[in-house]
Length: 398
Image (spheres, one colour):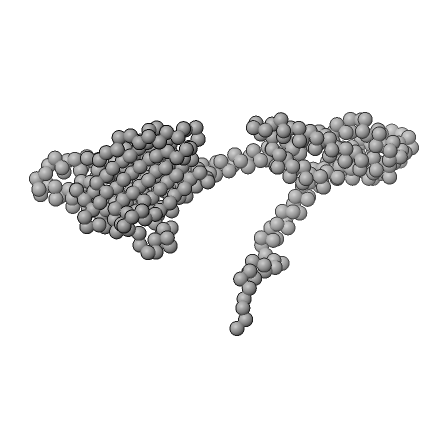
């Protein structure tokens, strides 16, 4: 049996009917047409000036001769523009390195302008239109180098650089708007998922069942406490409104309200401990970033274990990174947990939100740190904070 090359699919030649290749060809043609139109315009204006001067001397002077003399010089910019655009993108003029960038472009503008002057001198020497302008290449080179022509070519270079910066600014602005829209969509999706998951029948059934048990036991105080916790949690979730960020302390308060409901349901089977480093509570984090992870710890960990267990929530500093850890007892991770991790809405959604908010500075990791002990770690890069990692006020939650 013949062996197939695993790279054959990647190396397959592009077919003539490939829509992607056709789109690229079309975009190249459009770009060439656009550049031709842009740089033909100043050539036409220059040709009109020459034509008017020629008609004043010779009524039979043709516009074709003027166009042949003037336009090709500006067409040189069709070839030069992509190189100028590439340089403008490689060396953008930014506040952090404005002197270096301006110096680079000043030198480049003079070099490019001189290159155009050399071509213009060569072309004008081949296509003289007036007897008094029938000069040699060196004469044209000297004349153009000491005239406003050189200045106009330098100015043309800076026009291209300015246009690139305007386009790039618009692109970055549009990228920020798209990223913000994605964050808003992820926040809205998370909020709706949290509300839906908490209001789904099994959650309400468990809560009402625990509530009815408290009533049957005539534990009025416990029943009222659970109703209060449930109401506080639902009101706090709805009160988030359109916010997509909040301080970590507010996020922990919301998690505490949720765990108070679960504590009323699970009783002594659920133990909660929070350890928050000094200053970490003021770090701004994506809203509801901990909620789905704590839900997973309760549902797949504590509730799935007959004897219950402990949930530990930590917030510690690691340089400019704040590390959040949710550690819980339970049955442990299944053998195929890596393959099934993306199926977990809470994990996949949280990872996407970290990527949108912090880029490479956001990370999520799941690991088994002991028999039946699972830890989920979130790392978020926080600029402008020192590495104060002293833990404060660890303690149980009533």
